[in-house]
Image 1 (cartoon, protein in one colour):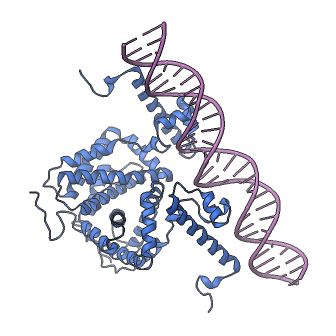
Image 2: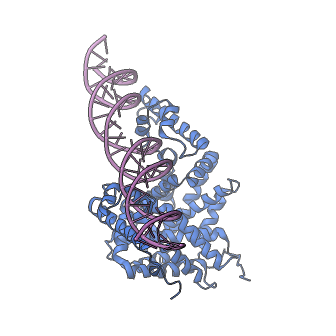
Image 3: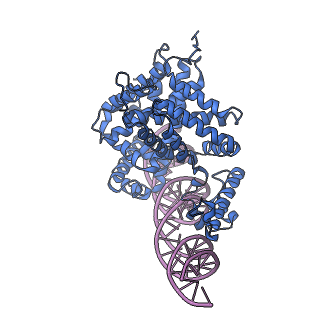
Length: 209
Length: 209
DNA sequence: GGCGTAGTGTTAGTCACTAACAGAAGGAAC
DNA sequence: GTTCCTTCTGTTAGTGACTAACACTACGCC
């Protein structure tokens, strides 16, 4: 097994680092859920994980990063790049985000819910999330351009931004419903709204009395 | 003139307050442009304006608020509510945002440019801006619902979020072009991308070689 | 002119985050 | 297994945004 996957790399040092990181993150999330994000200091998290607050900042650049840092974006960007070039940009975004979200949803639904709710209900975390959204948007736009270099870059950026907004809205509604709804269905519905932006839903026209 | 407009309300106290507020904001923006946002402390701003740092925080809840607080959102929400009910949601958003942006653009183009660039190039300010975006989105969604109560609320939220993303993209590109482009045209183009999301621009179909 | 009520300054404190240095522990070479 | 280097970690001290408490000043009403 030459040059195996991530875990086999294992010096004791690497393993310890990974464990410390997980420990900090786990204790942080637990404390955030118990006492709220603002009600928990970095010092407390570090103490709970048995490290100093400096070590905390060596693993996570900011307090927010403990919650916000998921590694999903590159995965989804990969899915976008793999969509067939015949597909228009919005469809490619739709399918790739659907697929990516579905994976996370199947594997980690509860964790996704808890973390998303925490982010949406904490102003500081929401701010951070939105700030990262810009980077995500550029990542997706890059993947789209790579797939179809001839397409108008401005168009691509607008659609990438709008798609992220749609997914965020779906996530928000999902959390507002206490996670009862089916997230992939909400994402589909959101993209449906983007897809037929004029008029109402495809086959349902409301009558304004 | 019973109960007149804002300026006539004038005790000396009110006038002083307004003036202090303007003074703090003006000095802050000047210092931000000179030394950067992060390179300017609240203490320096307060000193420049001839007040203590506590007074600064009594006028602006955070350092970011000095830059980000524009009062445009309610004006645009008003424009949305006034659109004729026959218009579909996206068109109403398009026209209202167009109109609102155009007003600001005509009246305060340079200030808008400077402030927008500052926000887009400063991570802390971008975060704050995005955070407020959520409130803006709810405001716009409320205006749309008021105009047409029968429409699907989820649809409305998605379209409001997507429209804001489109406008933000337009603003970003405008600033990236050093303000040379025509902002209203960019906003129109962005909404064009949203409006015909599948396939390319209306009459221009690129050929992927 | 006297008095209540803002608006303000001072001081001291919390918390996120950083820089500098010192010590401990992993890992490779012999 | 000892030596030496590298990496990780803790301690300390500091900055800067933001808050609470209290005392003081000056507006504005009578």
